[in-house]
Image 1: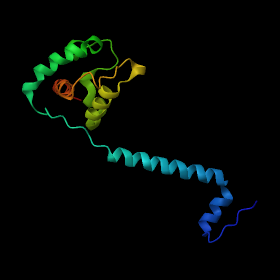
Image 2: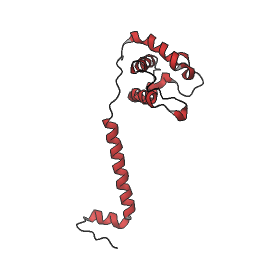
Image 3: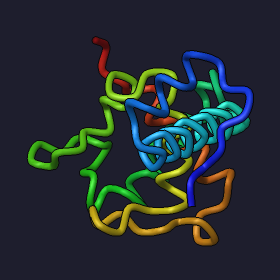
Length: 140
């Protein structure tokens, strides 16, 4: 069955002649998907560290890090052979470092061997660890 096009402007007519309808439909779906992803990312709130700037928390965060994280990430986050140097979070992720940390801690990265800590670590413990990590970030 042929499609009847009513009220097409010249640009639309050229597009329909040059590109099959499936290509146009796929492009429209892709554009809609990309817009939805962008809006979803914009709607996500960046996590907030309640201990931000509180240097007195750093030693406790360091101790918690060594208790829960050092078996994979090295004591005091110093590990020479691991590909993920947690002292470079800010360099690697910039302003998104806090969101990447929060998502990784809560959801894990099983394909990389990172376990899910949600439900095991309290939010307070997690943020104290992040406060420690923030204090040892390598400068660019």
